[in-house]
Length: 98
Image 1 (cartoon, helix red, strand yellow):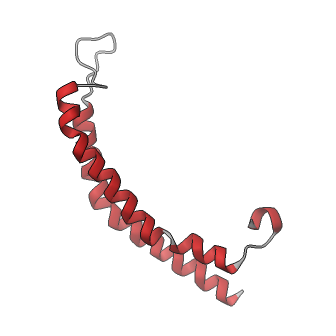
Image 2: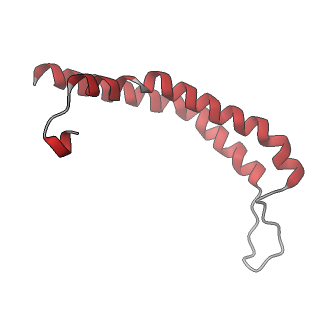
Image 3: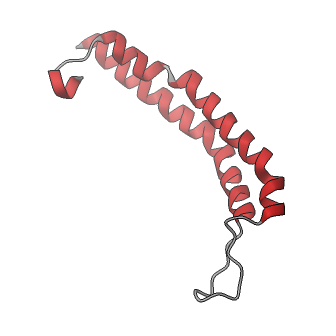
């Protein structure tokens, strides 16, 4: 709205920088939980796996790729959340002074 009209209502600014407090943990726990639930299926089906030998001489296992994603996602989540808290503090303090 700010780009189109030149202003944004304060309630919209607050909503933009506050809803993540509920949505981030919900989304992160849902994604990690669904990946965890799908791990046995990934292991059994070997779907989206690329085995050697092949013309690219490259191997990929979707199960291990998903485990790496979880291993990065879980410790990275608090960092993302703290970053959003910092951004929220900056954005909402600007809104009060302007």
